[in-house]
Length: 191
Image 1 (cartoon, rainbow, N blue to C red):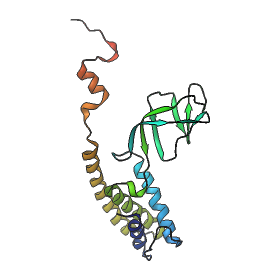
Image 2: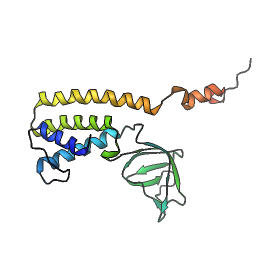
Image 3: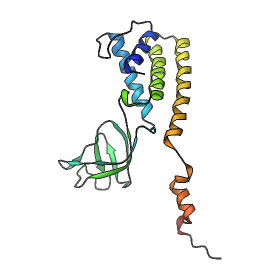
């Protein structure tokens, strides 16, 4: 689904005329695009197979590490480092000053519309349409119909996430340690 298709879906849902471009100046289209973008960002915040990245290196520039706003979640192995706004902060030394590049163990990156898989695009379009209808024409029955479509799209999205993510409970750190014979809390049990 193209972004323009999704935008026109929202416009048709409130009885407005479709547009030929996402950059049109029509007021309803601008509101619809804002709603679409808000839900695009919100839906990706959780982290899916397509927007989770591992081992991302952030460079020191001018003594600080800037983190682009598209990274909503940044997790470091070093728990003293946290993302504050768009900068990396050292909680122990209470400073933004960094002397070396840092590698994030895991990040969640908010992608643009065209980089999302079709299942996510459909989900975002339907959930945004339900919200847009509530906000613009206050038709709860019509909004509910789009919520049902959003729910069905979410099922497809979760199915694809399971297939693409290849999640396996045996890969979790506690299970791997248990299978290696590592005992928690350094217990020395003798028989």
